[in-house]
Length: 259
Ligand SMILES: [Zn+2]
Ligand SMILES: [Zn+2]
Image (cartoon, rainbow, N blue to C red; front, top):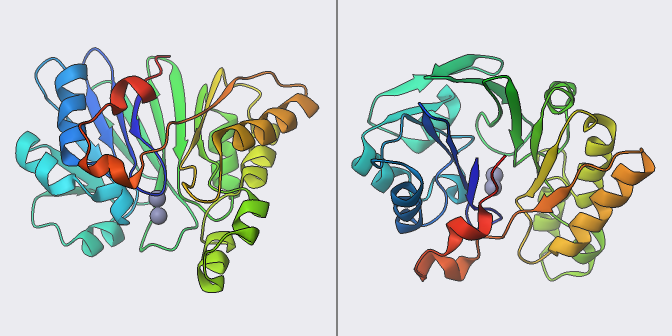
């Protein structure tokens, strides 16, 4: 599994086994996606693109990548309606499953201010990954998914103090901290402390460019894990910054972590 970029400006993961390549979200620059596919896949082949929700930081490059790969889009009906895709797609409901080659994917609905947002459980060859990047609170279904995962990718969006002191308008602060907004470092830390006993690796995802720092997120999560007797390494994913949209992509090697 590779991160091609993470954060408020762009998100995408590439998951590859010997038989199957999936893109999960497509929110970084199109040329970053293309460069990653060239580097990481034998023939730029993608079997399917899974879309978590319609916000631009998750779908920015979807159309150009679809043009290039002509692969299947898999998402919920609500997300598809917002995207107004005129191509074929596979509809999955929350709790529903989708299989591509040797990867089984379960969609799990999350609380976020989008039409029908989801996170994902991926299973392949006995390994389970849970990927949840935009959610205002951690539901029982998400907790169950984290508990069963060998690899966890969970949002650690903002530090509460930085957001409170920062320059965002009040309505935006309320949106971010609301039950359908984003997870704070503390929200992320307490969810992981309660669930990460099985996990061998944790990625902290979707860190805010303005209201978080990797070392603060890592410290919050590391402390909560240690207090609960866990020593699983938690790695903040490199942030995809707004200016990276116009830069040549140097994203893959930064974000790459091989399990
Ligand atoms: Zn979102
Ligand atoms: Zn997002």
